[in-house]
Every structure is written in structure tokens, then in C-alpha cells.
Length: 259
Image 1: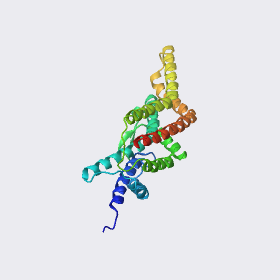
Image 2: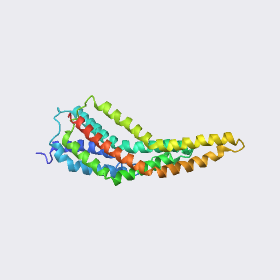
Image 3: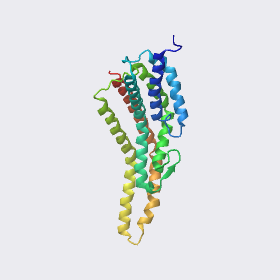
Image 4: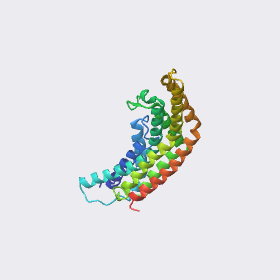
């Protein structure tokens, strides 16, 4: 007689894989400033909470090591889908900031992020952190935990059903990410372009003026002014994007459940 239920142990391990992978990729929880021990601890707590319910719905599998490995891989895929869909919003904000920063002249003024040990664009990092704050203000991180919990109810452990439409659907979400980034960056890029055209006319009218030297601080000032005045638009677009990607998470969970 065993002192524990092996079905419950297997359910906990699979639940921990799904929750841990999703937490590691989600915004807020997966932010690189959050220590890995905290991420693992949160995944452990969620798995411990949800394992009893999830173990009752564990998909039947033949005995052996290979089916267990396949089930673990399926759980990792489910966690990746849930975590990455939510992270795409912040990726769009950072991408928009990087585009704006390059046009403002900050492409040669990168900062070394000690947390990830690589250079980041100043404006891109600022836009990322701003979207991060909006994400928390909208309580979207609570929704992600609810979506993860719902996935355990709809998708049995090891019971991922790969649908042919999942790949094009996720591709559309990535395309939507680029579209959102362009919408966020377009107003600022347009203003900077107009200022460069104006400087071109000034250079033609006054050849003795060193427009090249003047353009650097001018583009930075105009870009920062455009970013400040376009802040309400930024908040509006990011808020709408959250609603769009929330619907995407629901749909991707439904597809993975075979619905």
C-alpha cells in the first residue's frame, strides 16, 4: 500500500510544467527582474492548488516513459501558448519604442541592461515599462492567472489536441503585434519625418547653416514632445490590444481543448 496516489503525483508534475512555463513567459510574472526562484515558487503554488482538480481529468495514456515525456511536452506547449500570447502586447510596445528611438538617434545610445546582460534601446525600454504599468493597472495579470486555471478545466493534463488552425491563428496574432507596434510608432515617426523635411528646406535656403549638427537635438526634442502628447493614444491602443489578446487566449485554449 502506497502512502501517496501516483496519479496525483503525475498530475502535479504535469500541472507544474504547464504553470511554470506559462508563468516564465507571462508579463509581470515572467519579467526578467523577477528572480527565477519566485517564478518557480509561484508555479509550484499554482500547481499544488490545481493538481487535485487536474489529476481527475488527466488524459489516459499507456504505461511507459515515452507517453509521460510526450505528456510533459504537451503541457509545455500549452504553457508556451498561454504565456506568449500575453507577452506579445509588451513586445509590440517595445518594438514601437525601438523604431521611434532609432529615428530619434538613440540607436547609437543603447543601455546595458544588467538583468539580461545585453543592450536595450532607451525609448523601447521606456515604452515597454509604460505598457507594463498599464498591464498591471488593468489587472490583466489577474486575468492571466484565471485563464491558466481555466485551461486546466478545459484541457486535460497531457490531452493537448493539436488543431490545424492553431498555427495560422498564432501567426495572425504575431502579425497583429507588428500592426499594433506600427500604430503606436506611426504618429511620432510622421512628426519626425516632417521635421526632417523642414530641415531639408532650411538647408537649401541657408547652405551656410550646419543643419546636420542642429538635427540631432531637434529630433530628440521633437520626438520626446510627440511621445508626451501621444501618451493618451498610447494608453488607448494598449488597452484595446489587451482586450484583443485576451480573446486570443480564450480562443487558443478552446482550440487546444479540441473545441
